[in-house]
Image 1 (cartoon, rainbow, N blue to C red):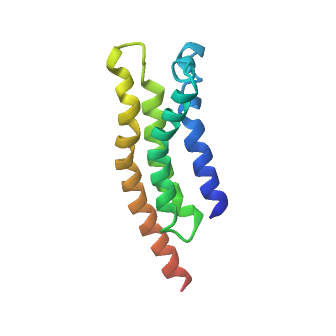
Image 2: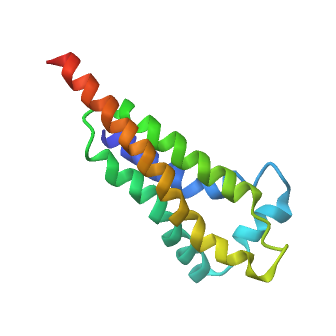
Length: 126
């Protein structure tokens, strides 16, 4: 589970930037053209989402159970960060705060599915 948790943290940190790459460098620049304080603030906000997945991982015995919250949570995050145009509207930056909070819903749904799957695997083992 340690390796799985490390992968969750790593993917959670780099995912917002990776989803910007398919567009162009201007889109990536919207997330990277900030000072150290901006990087730390953005990282702390994203920790809300991947921290939720990390917290769920302590309920599971098997790493495969993390697939459901990771697919649903990181899928939502990839979609949201990949489609957010910060240059479109002055208030668009507020979405950077709301995206990780909204991601907690699919993460919770995936967490429940993962927990049910983990319980099923425990019963089969016993």
